Structure formats: structure tokens, C-alpha cells
Length: 117
Image (cartoon, rainbow, N blue to C red; front, side):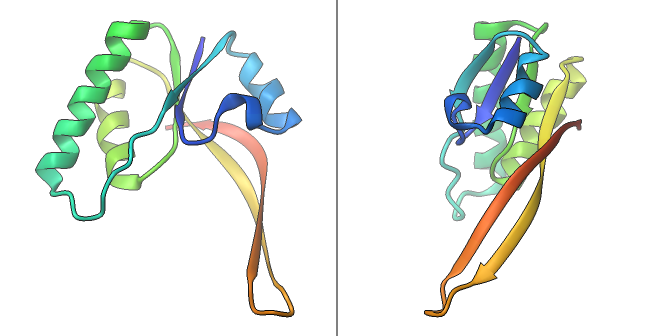
């Protein structure tokens, strides 16, 4: 089983990422929390503890967890999960940015692979 712990729901992924995810079995979404930039390190660590506890209660230790989001929270969650022997993945992408004639930046991300933390 693959737990998608991110703000990008599984059903909105492109074909290549969907196929890569299915290699892990069933995929379940767990929405990534909003991590306010004003939060202290202690608050981020408490939030990480709460989410790791929730993930363990819902899925146990046998699932692989795709963790993508705010970096300090991601680091805290991945550190805790790996210490418990839980496999954690990041998604890697190619990024292409272009400026439009009206000064807007258009960004396109193309999934390449899952990479283990």
C-alpha cells in the first residue's frame, strides 16, 4: 500500500505517476496539513508527532508513505517514520518555467520517479 501524504490527490496525478504508484499496491490519500510560516519549531514538531501517530493508527507500519510538502514538517515526519522502519518516498519532477508576454510565470512539472528518503 502507498499512502499519499501530500496536497496532490492521487486521482489528479498524471499517467506516469499513477503507474509508478500502483507498483506499491492500493493508494490512499492523506491530506497534508497547512503549516503556517509563523509556527515555531516546537509547534511543527508537535504537529509531526500528531500526524505520525495518526498514520500509525490508520495504516500500521507496513505501508510505504509518499511525503511531499512544507520542508521542515516533511523532515520531521520522515525522520520519525524512518526511525520506525517505515519506507518513505519523495516524487521527483522535471520543472519547466516560462514567462508569458504579460509577465506571468507558467510552471510545468513532469513526474520522473519516486525516490526513497
